[in-house]
Image 1: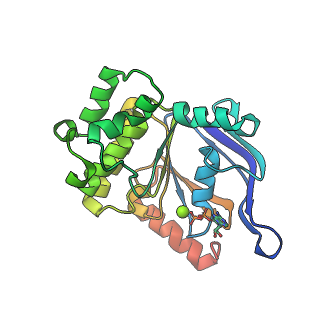
Image 2: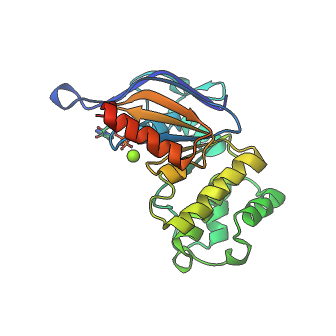
Image 3: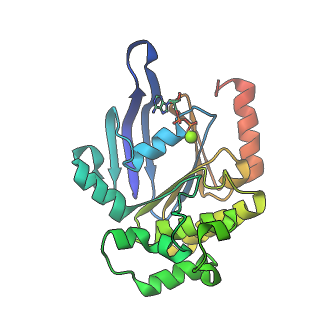
Amino acid sequence: MAACTSDLSKAYGSGDTRVVALDRISIAFRKGEFTAIMGPSGSGKSTLLHCVAGLDSASSGSVRIGATELSALGDRQLTELRRDRIGFIFQAFNLLPTLTALENITLPVDIAERDVDRRWLDTIVTTVGLSHRLGHRPAQLSGGQQQRVAVARALVSRPEIIFADEPTGNLDSRAGAEVLGFLRDCVRELGQTVVMVTHDPVAAGYADRIVFLADGRLVDEMTEPTADRVLDRIKDFDAHGRTS
Ligand code: ADP
Ligand code: MG
């Protein structure tokens, strides 16, 4: 297993304003698998991703990355785990505007004062199709190219697992397809593990498996999805009121 949770719960606020965002979620993410997390807005997708990636803490239950229990880690150990073992891709790219594409890609390794593995960097840059854009700054790149820089940045330290929250949310469908195809290649060809939140059936169709959340609970799962099957399943949910 690359990561797993057991009875993971997360509540925000207290008293009248208490919101249970996650309600006893037990889920495992296998190594080398591309998982999509789907569900209506507010169902807890981002919260689940943030808790598993160590960006937010659980209220109760367990989260493990590999064999490491996150609740047992201090702040500093958690920071190191995020830096060394996890990659994160955000909807808004989060590139530094004054750095070139190449400098953005190697930033996490540079911050960690590690040497960049040149062969691995070449492999990533070639796979992501950015070889001729490395000297450009983010403003000189299209949205799709910027997100591919962000994906390359997430890959450069060879993380055990990559988390992506709506990575194609700011892209048109063609650029979205490029990024999704690349993520899938990373899983198939490089053995990467990817967990992606999306509300888009087409995006989810790239995954090996989809898990569905509703009201902070795990309600369904689909393997080898296609966009059509995802759409049918969502219609089914709506018809039976399971997501409301
Ligand atoms: P999704 O990503 O599926 O849209 P979220 O995980 O963002 O859902 O949110 C799940 C629930 O938790 C929602 O009801 C949301 O309002 C609530 N929530 C998320 N983050 C916070 C926060 N920082 N403070 C209070 N409530 C939050
Ligand atoms: Mg969200």
